[in-house]
Image (cartoon, rainbow, N blue to C red; front, side):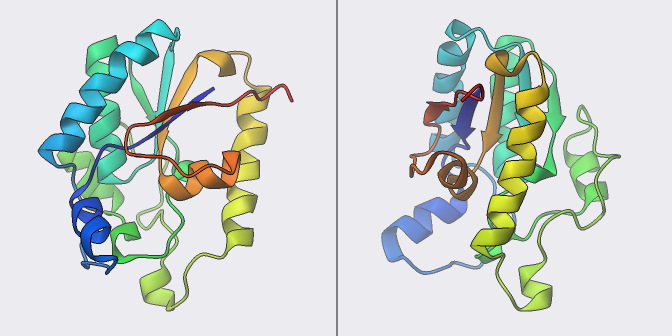
Length: 179
C-alpha cells in the first residue's frame, strides 16, 4: 500500500514559518500543494496504483482529486485515515458541505461531524485514539486482496502512526501489510 501525504495546505505555509496555529478550519491546498499533487501522480501510476482512498479533509480531497484525474481512478472516502485532531485545521467540513464542493465524490457514509471534535470537546485526540484508528484501518486494508495496488491520501500524523516516519507534503511511503 502507498501512503501519500496531502499537498501543501494554507495551514502548512503559516505553521511552518511561525509554529503557531493560524486557526484555519479545514484548509485548502496552495498552488504549490496542487503542483505537488500533480507531480505525485506519475510515481503512483508507475507503482501500479489501481485504487485511491482519501481522508475527508479538504486538503486530502483536493490532492486525491488531482491524482485521480491524472490516473483515471475514482476516489473512495475513508474517515479512519483523517489527521490526528490537534489543531484548528483538523476541524473538518460537514458531510453536506463536502458533497456540495466535491459533487463527484460520495460522502453518504459519513456522519455530519466525522472528525474528532477536539474544539467542541476541548481535548485533542490522544495518541492511543489515533493508534486504535490506524490499527483498524491497517487490519481492514491487510484483508483486502488489492492492498498492494492501493494509494491512500492522508496526513502527517496518520502516516507517522502507521510507519513511525514524519513525511513531507506529497511524499509517498510504501507500507508492506503482509508483515
